[in-house]
Image (cartoon, rainbow, N blue to C red; front, top):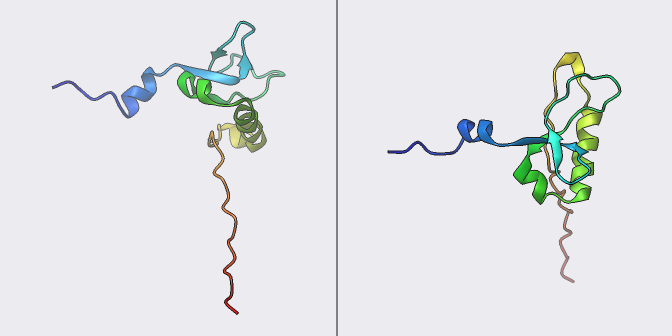
Length: 95
């Protein structure tokens, strides 16, 4: 029986990229950074997910990640996609 390709083993084998640092020819630089001087905090996602994201989704994810900051030297997890808020529906009264 073959082991399933899911969960943590799949997570480690994925190619992780930093969507805040695009390359000139296309694609993205590898996730992480060597030095923190003058660079914005990286937002890392699997390459397959980065390819499916729109430009607006990428900007939003990067902005939220950098706004969350790095309190106490620990990286903060920020969701890649924002959950849409539902509008409150009004009930119509019968006359």
